[in-house]
Amino acid sequence: MVDDDVSTGVIVQAMLEDHYDVSVFGDAESCLMGLDQDFPDLFVLDVELPGVDGYELCRRIRALPCSKFSPVIFLSSHDSPSAILAGYEAGAQDYITKPFDHTVLEQKIDNLLRIKSDRELLLDQAESSEQLASIFMTNLGEYAVLIKYLRSLNECSSYDDVVEATLEVLDRYKFSGIIQVRLPEGDKTVSRQGENWPMEVAVVSHVRDQGRIFEFKTRAVFNYDQITILVTNMPVQDSDACGRIRDNLAIVAESANAKIVALQTLRDKNRLLSEAQYILLVLTVLTDKYGKKYKEAHFNSTLHTEYLVNDLQSIFGPLGLGNDQEDQMLEVIRQRSDELVAYYDFGNEFTDVLASLQEKLGSLLPSNVG
Amino acid sequence: MDQTSKIVEWDLLRSKFGIKPGLVEKLVAAAHGSQLNKPSEVREAISAGQFDVLAKLAHGVRGTAANLHALSVQALAGEVETLAIAQNQMAFTKGTELAELVDAMLIEMAGVISGA
Image 1 (cartoon, rainbow over the protein chains, first blue to last red):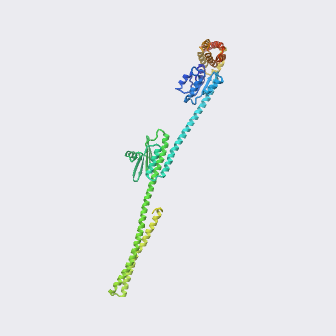
Image 2 (cartoon, rainbow over the protein chains, first blue to last red):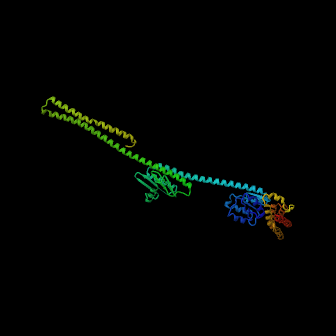
Image 3 (tube, one colour):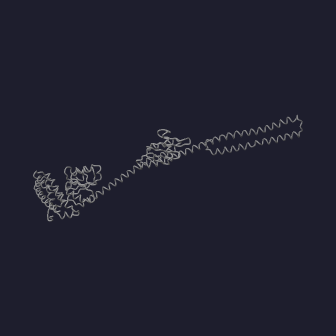
């Protein structure tokens, strides 16, 4: 309260002191100086003051950023409409003329403080809403990075692609970090510094067995079977952001791990496919080659048996054998020759089995292969 | 305490502020201190022909008188203030009356203070 009339100060202080802390000043200057120590919830000002008058004091109070919601009530003997209007124009919320009823003053103070409290509550809620919206937008941005990463994983066709996409996520989150992928042909440790830097390899080797998620000061490690992601600058001062980023990076690491496993499976499958194609090719060649050889052997054995019979017949004359003897000998030779030729008949069976295997293998392989 | 005085409406004052123990006495003491020099200041302003000073003094007296329920003082102070603002010579005549009335009020208040 600012009033050079001490009697008014005594009344107001006495009537309000049970509910409020009241400070009374006799002039504007001492009031303004007092604001540096403690800013009041409400001002009661007289118009007539020594030096700076109440209107000017009100304007100066209103100019202070912290007075945004602190109401001002003028309590003055000036009761003309122009005096009252001047009070409102200076920034006051109410104007009470002297002589005044202290119960009315108390009621007006209660009302104005309640309005002030409501406005502050609304402001707090508005600020909370703004913060919430800000967090939501931040989350949205972080999720967008994550979704983009998951999409990009689909397009990765090599381990290097996966590593680069993962490094890009760290870049987008403004993180420094190291990524290690563990492959059948050996580990690969990568950061924006380069590949397989001894210090980075040593650091990752130290933390890769520390559990799924391991945190130490500003470092966070995400360990999966095929990949370790080490972030070196987690925003530990912002626990909310830290929690969100931790969740997101866990998803990044898990997805990268799954992609690496999928790439390995695909690679194994392609290797098997390649081997099967080779076997199919060999089988095809063998089937063809040995089929021909068996046919040739069968034909030759038949031919040579005939040659043998003919040769024997040509040497039977000089030997002076009887017809029965010649026939008997020839019969024995033909019979044995037929039995000999019959041994080559399995050749069809063998090539049939090879052809069957070839057909089965061919059906297992994709139609565009082999 | 002189309950029959016509300057300060003591009954009214006590009914209004008596709910706070010691407040009436404190109020009277404060008002007495603030008004003690007012009669002489009013007279000096009149002697010097200073309407603006007289208007301010009358304004101050009016506010204190209102708080004390000294209705006659309040009314006369208001009249002097208005006349002084209008730079009416009657302000000086009425101002002299006001100084005398405030003197009487101070005597009355002093009696309350000494009896407290």
